[in-house]
Length: 308
Length: 248
Image (cartoon, rainbow over all chains, first blue to last red; front, side):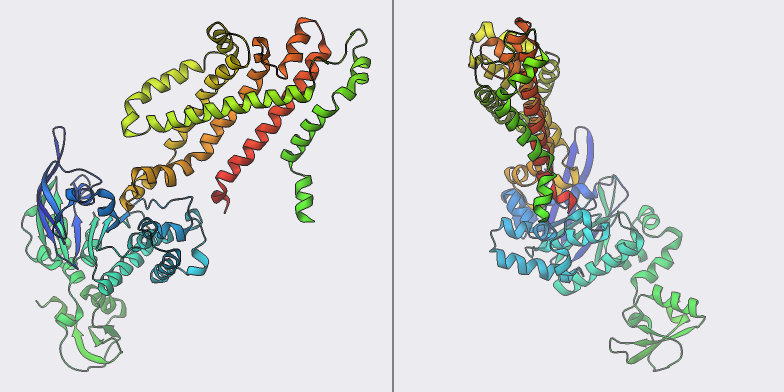
């Protein structure tokens, strides 16, 4: 869906992005991670042409982005930023309807789409559509920010540290919304963050950048199990690497057969981290594993968690 | 009922009503001025009607402020675009220098260049009004949060779309604030403009000062003052309308 081929950005003598090549396949949730100044936001903004690139090329759905007029390109890529940037003088409905309005949708269709998105992001359409951004909490504003990015059903979602300014509880809620959205819509998402736990939770693939260079790209488990350099090892986990592994592995991959009813049940798609936490807090060493309908499908023992 | 009682307490409507009544009833106050200034042979300015003076005063202020508004807002927009960015410093410097020159001096310079009458007054007022308007436009456009501007670009609005739909609406309160300052200053400067031959509410003031007629001065000053108050309140109302969303 998006291919970066030896993309560089130089400002004067400084090299901000250094020959980054990265392919993001359709339906992927690729997390671009690195410390501040690593060049990850610059990469993102070169994709929607907010920043011109100095060398290399970027293709979007097979076409070089410089051959697509920037406004057209951006209307096909939802854009969510940390500082949200809702238009303060427009109602929530008009904010969400920005791109459909630019694309000339009829008003009735825009209205229906706005209500659909508000419901999707768990905001009651009747009470929110006529409000102004300043009347919403930061978390609600970012929900609207995500809705605005999704409005015209773009092929790609570009998210630049979208949850960095939210408090931990709200951040977790919104991460869950993004996971749900990605699972249901299979949108291609490029997500920039500096928070490793966020990356491990969301990513189907992680691309790690350091000082303008792409250091390693792979699934969360690959980065944890086989870090390419000491830098990667320190960045993804350091001494907590084992614990971080528990964040990306699921109960289903480790449970054993049997319908042992002992212990409180845990969902099959929960992470090992959640399972371990539940064992510790309840003082038990085994949990019944249940599927979506609550049927017991297996058992997870404490020993299963460390076995690999 | 409720609307009527609100209208009664509206200072804008009151100030307009007081101004109009003062213009209409000034001739009727002749006995009052005669009593206050018994030494004056002519206690009421009667060369022109106050209504005609008020009207030409208002027209001069309105036309010059409108011209200054169109040119000033356009200039303010131009220097904040990439194409005009290099002129921004010089425009801001000119504004800073221009604001140090008193309006009277602008009039004094205009006369030898253009001659006497309504035109030099119009040009001097328009030029002087430019300064707060350009300033207000640049400042207003500067209040647009960087995040909002970035989101507007990232969402796919064109540069023109960003200006019309995002930047100007958000800058409008400050831009109208500049227009308000320019207009109020022009009400005062237009009074002085009667010295260069433009008939305004300044005519009784200037003639009164020359002829030692305090009553004339008071009559002109009261009306010009009331006009300034009414215009100021009207602009306050417009500014409130441009940011209604803030109080939603």
